[in-house]
Length: 137
Image (cartoon, rainbow, N blue to C red; front, side, top):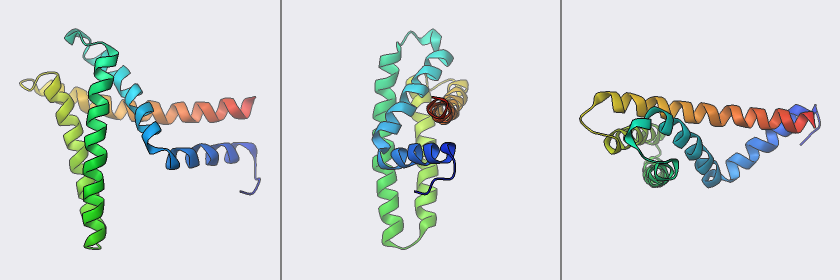
């Protein structure tokens, strides 16, 4: 790693940690998603830890399914299979949250999609904030 400026080094170090610790980063994303899910589904009466357990289970299914699609894509040497599989598993992610909070209401699926995106965006911006704070001090 060559020294260009402090910010680049810190961001590269954080990105390297994320790439080598996918399980931890999935837990952190799950925590942010649990916060947003708690906000969006506050009338359901679930606490944040129950939602976090649900999201942990869904992330487990996500990673196992992604692994299967990646292995099939690698086996047939077609990366498009892996890409389509990842998109299908993300649809499952939204579907599972919507099912948990009430399958009869279409709005629950829209809310779960919004929670997914907000959780990921919050995670990304928290990493940028972390890099900025490390660079500041």
